[in-house]
Image (cartoon, rainbow, N blue to C red; front, side):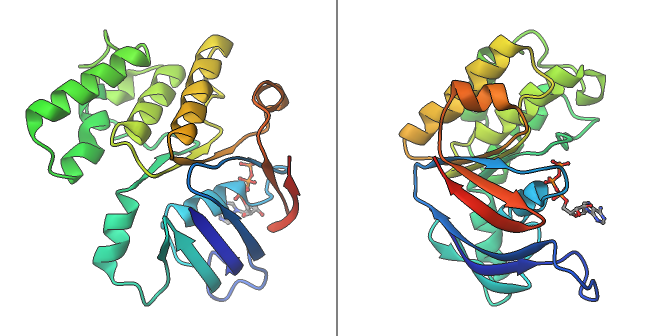
Length: 223
Ligand SMILES: Nc1ncnc2c1ncn2[C@@H]1O[C@H](COP(=O)(O)OP(=O)(O)OP(=O)(O)O)[C@@H](O)[C@H]1O
């Protein structure tokens, strides 16, 4: 579950206007939410904050039931982050590493045995249609292949929270549908999922509650 109460966030301390203002909402464990709003509304900033890439300037933030603030010990934040799967808009793969090594990263951070890592990673790469591309450096992949690698990396360690920023915009429609159906299935199995998108057709196909941001504020929340 995630919970925000009067959360503000700004890029730099001296910046006059916060990027995220007075956000209060919660998503229960296993909830699926679309994150909507015009370009520049703050969707990416909110997902990055929930991925604990920085801390709120003010307000209370709870992720997977744990408070996240400047007082939270660093080791706790690092462990918490390992329980989150994030699909960044620009993928953020390690360009020099192969597909298989990129996807193995979250499991290696958890010090899982290598044979287990091998099986998990190969199974998920096969599922996302990259079974034939495992040894290719991420830098040599097409946009759609990079996006599927990023999705595989975000879910391979069965995170409690999945954050995805336009996760299917480089994919063909059938792939996009298959991957969103997987996110939806993971949510019914107890993973909290937040997906930022501008794609109205996806939302119509998978009607789920949404959080609508405008100029850094939550202006609508609902079905
Ligand atoms: N690197 C940056 N430096 C300064 N300001 C930025 C930077 N990135 C984004 N912003 C500003 O922060 C605000 C929120 O941007 P953000 O990327 O979170 O919006 P968004 O809703 O994800 O937009 P989009 O739908 O276009 O991805 C905007 O006003 C944007 O102009």
